[in-house]
Image (cartoon, rainbow, N blue to C red):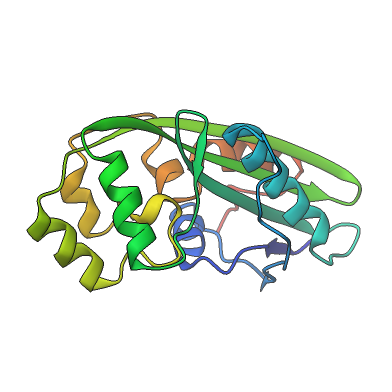
Length: 191
């Protein structure tokens, strides 16, 4: 039984390592991540995680793990910004407000799928012009939903969260462990 991580995210690989797991293979799927018209953030996130799991090539006993993280401001999905201008817009909109970070996790073994969603509330402070320009110049916003990474420099902008820190980073460990065990993956191996 192999563990296949269907993600190119180094953060997800690092979070798996916290559970003592090293994937046997890393096979990021190539799927269309465009939200459908009127699609709500939680449903969008769950759909992408499922589509990723189904797109990864695996043997019948292999365990495929995929996830998708979305930042939601009300009913709006704030995905990965296309450029620094869009990143600045996202960060300005998030400033002084609470938003949700949703991470959907899917485990697939053969034809069976197990799925859980982690929904966390996050408050970001209003950023000064100096903070915003420095953060954008650092490039950490690139490839990050909502244009920020809580585990990086943007952690200084987050005075409050309610939920799963690892879920906000991109892989909720409690939910992931539960799903892997449900799929029969030996999570707590003896040395």
